Picture 1 (spheres, rainbow, N blue to C red):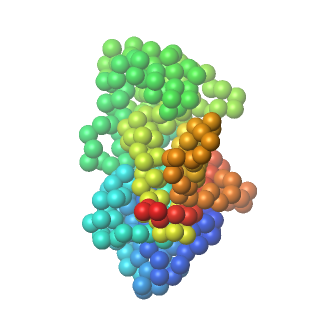
Picture 2 (picture 1 turned 60 degrees about the vertical axis):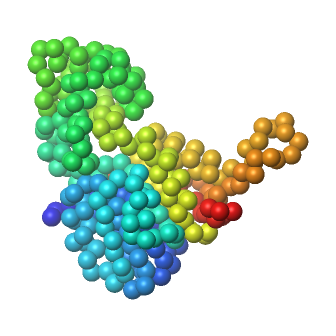
Picture 3 (picture 1 turned 135 degrees about the vertical axis):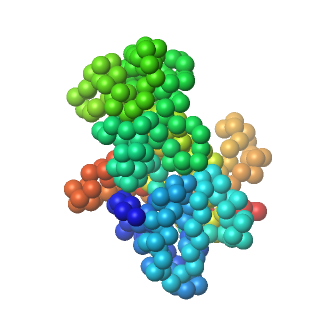
Length: 313
């Protein structure tokens, strides 16, 4: 399978996770296995690599790409919101490291029939897991105007959300909107191309994709679950590609790194809340050289944290 995807910030991930040869590592967004392969090469035969992805094409590609590693490998098709169940099923209690590489893969964008790209005409789909029923076609043709406005504004940060949503409603009164090409034309006729914001369809397609796949609503909880599974000294690394994701990761890390949460006017602490992680520096970004080689890396941010307290402490 030609699963083309160039993993972002691979060396930075290896440094962030401080991979231990006999450790157990979970890649929550396996894709074609780029990050997992780099981690797996540092593991011994006693080490273990667990890969999780909901895309069947990613599972097939990663299975092939990781087959030569000497460590134990477990690849599971599923959503990272299910990581507790996955680890329980594998009888894994604690991890040495976890990685999330969020967003859509190059393979998904570049495969026309998946419907992720506004630059290719294809059926409106956008499902990362094609077993699920909700598609981009459902969102565009069934959601009412207020719901579309909310999605476009919150998930796409599109200032012409009302205008675009109204145009979608008007167009589908005539006939259903079937393809990405049809939707792009509606967007182009409804919103101007801004000087710095690029094509308006980019933001709308991002919004629809997030809605279809429930990307943001499960993220904070999944990070908390992953941190809870880390050993003391274990690391979590999260790569984001837009401000909405990054904001959730930043705030979740901040919450997990917070100690006492009593009101400031309390003379003594009574909450007994303890910080679970230590945030390791500010968000890192790709080098100029990596961005030159892979333009899709330019919006990436990497945040890293280390577990500092056990779940029972």
